[in-house]
Image (cartoon, rainbow, N blue to C red):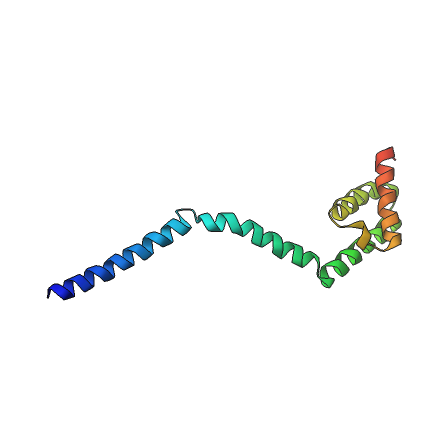
Length: 115
């Protein structure tokens, strides 16, 4: 009987130790999750931005907006230019075709000159 109680006590002690260790590692607010989740998501984002589909889609979207800008009347061009500059701000220019890169640089230049 005494040995059975000691075995049960040892099992409960080990279980309590495992739970305490898990709480220390995770904490009330999941300390490890707070530390590593942003880094994990950043890697996922960078990996996504390297995909062919993302790059092709971004270029296609910017070229479509370029065409809309060319077709638009003067009153709409300012709004379209703002949207195009906003969408292209985080996209590297070296990945753009030369004509699109020149177009966006022209929009930036016009914006700086106040045209």
